[in-house]
Structure formats: structure tokens, C-alpha cells
Image (cartoon, rainbow, N blue to C red; front, side, top):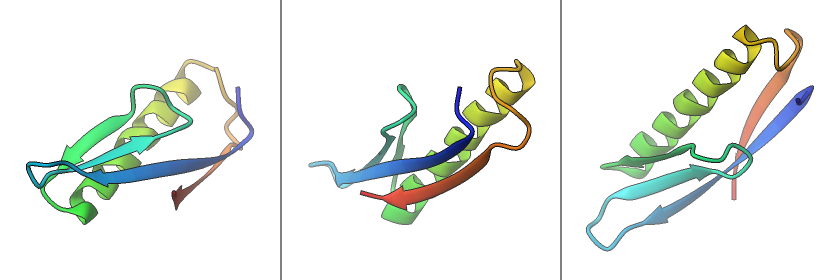
Length: 71
């Protein structure tokens, strides 16, 4: 599916004070956190789990590189 992936994380603060982080290139990878840092860490961790699952399923190659950036 992808050889080198740069994932973009969009961050937004909800009205109730929680932070939401969404990984644009991985549909469904969206998390909430009490703080901006917590939401960012959770989004990166979930994205890495998705990449690991795709690696296990043979959908991506073992040499895939992953990087994150904030939108």
C-alpha cells in the first residue's frame, strides 16, 4: 500500500475542553485526549498499530518508513 508514509495529524480543541487528533491518511484513526500532548501521543500510537497490523497482513513491506507532522 505505501512504502514511505508521512502522516498528517490534525488537532482541534472541542467545546468541552478535550482535544481531538485525526490522522488524515488513515481513515478511522481519531482519538481524544485531556490535553493536546495526550491526544497527539494517542494518535501516533494508534497509527503505528494500524501500520503494524498492515505489516502483519502483508499489505505493506517491512522497509516502510513512517513520519508524523502536525497540520
